[in-house]
Length: 347
Image (tube, rainbow, N blue to C red; front, side, top):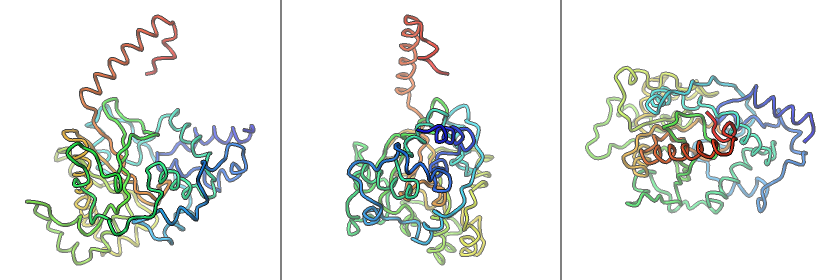
């Protein structure tokens, strides 16, 4: 890598250290176009150009025109949240709408930037989608005839194994900074996240007062949800935190258009978003029974690709905490015997 390219990468790390979804967009043609000619660039073995990806990638929450607008949009830099002390502190932040403001640490961000250099900056969103489709085993024709009407807990069996045709849970390869008692997992969706069935009451549920309003304009409410961040949790919140839910829902380039379509009733739109995400909460709870979590899906305008990817902040169980303490203790013993503790144990 030339000195000029190295300098640009360092500048990106320190100046444009954006949160985990926007960070994915910084190797755009406008900023790193010349790196496509660098020896560092290559297309992963066995992968072809973007034309073949399109036949396998089924985008449920963005039209072709919207995708084109996203590709041409100006990159934005957003604020970062301060990492809370423990898992309980992550819940109100995500539920306020700040999930996408959690950032990676320097080392993880550097790995993410290096990973992106393996893709053509001019077609990065397409090639990233192609990469993940292959990794998930979804690089095959979309099985439209078998598509579930709603992704929910029924896609996880009694052994907590998911139906990998439609959903897959994985640890985050490039996790954000979180409290020590919290892990960052991903839920990948191949089927639509938000459908009309998501609004139907389940069991003894009583629909909110706005339910009738949603039903009269459901397509536009779903589009409002598709265009914005979505989040949910299985954690009971204090009355004070409940009042702040969705207060910081991120504005997107077409927010005004989406708001007009629901008669500018933004509180109703936020409530519809929260109500419609219950299926995702049930799905995650079925995968991780007894565990507390909060989740969010970043809006389509800031994602690095067009697959639906849900970020889960999962409270670690006692077993994981004990294992980490044992690992830390072993590392300290190794450090004391080898004299390299400053390199083995990082704060």
